[in-house]
Image (cartoon, rainbow over all chains, first blue to last red):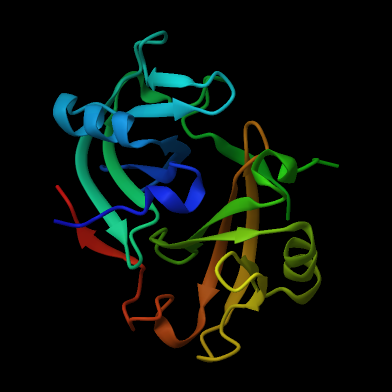
Length: 105
Length: 105
């Protein structure tokens, strides 16, 4: 079994969330081991909120849950890429489909 | 001008690197302000290596430079998405096109 490197960042691993259907990057969130396990068992993404210091079931407030299609780790097991089916059409709290909408250059 | 939130993670901001042509996620790296500025001025990605504690000009060893096409920040300015033209066809030190090739689920 692949050991994820939660230890590199104070127990957190970044998870890039990608829309399975289109391949579009929707957001980046952080998982600790507990939220990762909840993601595995529930089939929905669970994150760890650094600002609120608590687990966060994505969509619990908005209804915009993310159904997990596939979990992929990178070559050194310190980043996840999770392909999801995004419910409600938007991953961002602003209502945008993706959190990445501000072009800098 | 958009202020990036380098402060949230001890001066580092994660950068999701996406192949501009295909939209595929290639890797995730970290930038400090200096590597971000070098990325802006050089047009190539520069990262901060947490393990080596030094700036890292991606491709300097392999020749697999990443030409910056577009830089996008997320809704709260604490993650970058950088669309690149990947030289040499692979972003990963294993020779894989993308660092994300290990499926967990």
